[in-house]
Image (cartoon, rainbow, N blue to C red; front, top):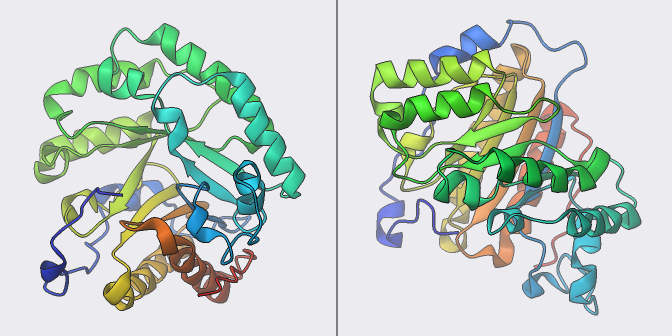
Length: 302
């Protein structure tokens, strides 16, 4: 995970405090807790990690069983494998069956939309490809969560009309989140307001990314009543700062839950993914204690 990576010598000097709520939060959240409470999902972005054997997975686990092992511990995954090509439905069905074999009826895949759509076509003239992609996603059946479109760093506000046309024509029956990385979406108040008003109009969410080197992407906006948080920790000697950042997030999420937040997808990343489940386990423990989230406790054997 390279996004937002900085020289380790800079980490202790960074201000990791969360920004104030964006303007969309007050517009989106009604001001009272959701009638059914808030549902929480915590996961990682990979399951195929041999380093997790003997810690998260059984020591003798085979690679073909890693997803099944993963789904015994977590209720979601940020699925990056669907980013590199237009996937086929048969593969999605195989992954769904692995989750079903794990006995986790609540598991949700959060697939990243293919780069053929987001990066190469740049949201233009890609209706056929999007249709093929969505057809494959149906293979997850009830285990399909929101779809995640991550745009390239150079997709800025000058492409607003392209974004608007794409969002307006998104097929119904799916939930969508965007991650936008160009700094001008957030630095320019006019562009920022226009962006989040557009997403709210079409009930499209946006991810909030918390990484060391891209504090601008920590925009704290909620165009929908759901939060998709991509948290990038530093690990190692900086584990204490990772945990302090999680603590602050739990406090902010508590404020949003009190105001009507309905769902949280909290994805744990680290630049060295070898101990990401350790970070995810800390997140789970904090959410369980604060909200009674009912998430499975991660027994990470260090």
